[in-house]
Length: 220
Image: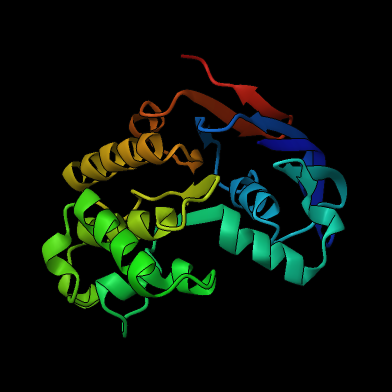
């Protein structure tokens, strides 16, 4: 469902990625590790269509993101991708339920279908009683569970998770990782998890390492 074909990306004089290739099957859960500055976040941005490669192609479900205009890439992001960030990125003025439901609203899904899907995700992440709470009233682990629910509520084909446990303690991180894996399996979404944590990477189906030479299969 995802093919990254020999992509290269530079910013001014600095080459960040050089002929990187990656394939991801539908429903597959993969970790990408690597040193700081090696280009992990840039790779995620290319996969999300937020950046366009200088060379090579990114094909999502057979469609070349680089051949689309900005409006079409935005539509693809809204409908086919979900995002989980280290900093949560919840909107502080919206309730938890409305934060989770935001991708549905952006995709034109309202009313009873939206309410039912949000309620389903709230229950799945163990926050059914917190629907009317605000982000400031939740712990870090709870906010990350909301972020997972928001990423999956519109049933994306691919979830991009950028250091989702980086701001959590060990116990909360383990809970979040288990929850993410369970929800991905239940919804059939593929996921790329960018992480520095060997523990987090061990929860995925395979681990890849991004280096200056490209992507390599990590030693098990």
